[in-house]
Image (tube, rainbow, N blue to C red):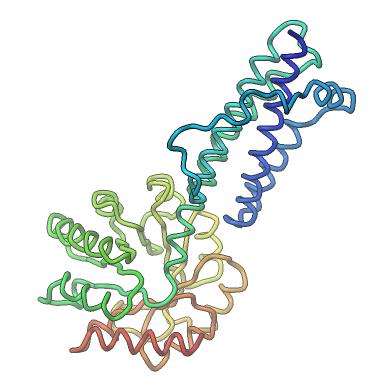
Length: 350
């Protein structure tokens, strides 16, 4: 019975080590998260730690050729998996292995002697790490779609025109993301508009982001929420949002950009790049500020404020991943054509 117990211990240590190493590589190379990478690496070494005599006994107990479970497959199990699914599958694999090791460690006379508390702690730590890594990967994919034109539909600038019709023109023109900016007090009207825009954006694979209103963003299942410096703090909002909803923050200083990144923002809007009529008392910081922020944060950057077809190339050259535009596309007759012109100028600057 002792020999069989050793085989179970060996198999589950191998299973835990393999799963943790894969999660570690995903945290390092897919999520680019140094903190999670370090946590997973430390956990892997702690779980697998043992002297040579310990490892020798386990290796000697192996019987890979006689293992009846080698060729067992679960019907319907897919061969191709996306990275988030791989994260969940391997986290579960490690958690199950750790629970088995924890239980075996409690059996009197288990040789070599195992520490049940060590496996229990690792299992509970991994629950949190799995959540953080999955959240980071899901949001990273969305934030990566912010390259190009980030169109802002401002209800006040729009006037009596239809939000939906203008959004359709923006999408045809090539907008990658649409933000609804609505400073009016009528929440029921805002909710109705947001639902229609969310459905339209989902249909066309375009990100839909709500400005300021976290309740509306949650109610319609928006892809993201955007906050200004006078809105709910980024760190507070991050705790309230679903793990796959991206969060952006507007900044005009390097310090604000660092704080937004530390608070859990997925992208940062830097501005105002130029004088703009869309926002009263806008602080103009220019493309130079964009370069400064680019040098200290690793998040996608969206340039905002007074951007049009004549200067979009300049902010692209300064390091912007995308450009947020209002007046240059909403304040003209041909919205679709104007959208294409801004995108063309931005891409030329890249």
